Amino acid sequence: MNNTEEDFLKNRSGFIKLSELAVSYFPGSRPDVASRKLRKRIKESKSLYKELLEADYDEKNIELAPEQTRIIIKFLGSPESFKRKHSRDL
Image (cartoon, rainbow, N blue to C red; front, side, top):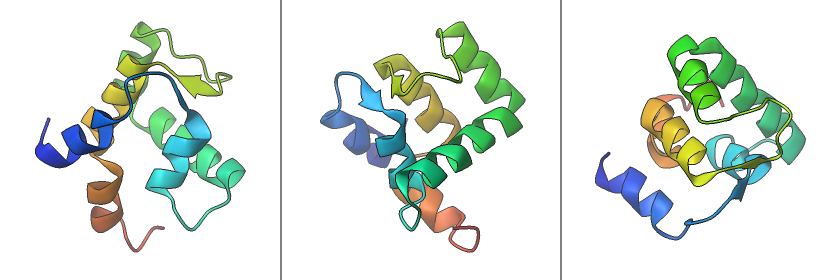
């Protein structure tokens, strides 16, 4: 995990709303739309989805456990790095 990812997680030791994380990745979207986009990215990455399922992820959850958040960041990068990499898609 790089410094940007660690910085993002530093103040998030507990559960986080999926919509809050999603808006961090898709800042121009409403929370419901950002959540759908994030869930779509999760399902498109078979290895990310598999690892999340192993961490008790459920598609209907509205909150993510700390380990689930770390897994998402491990695969997608921090929201800041994701936005830089995918700026055209946002």
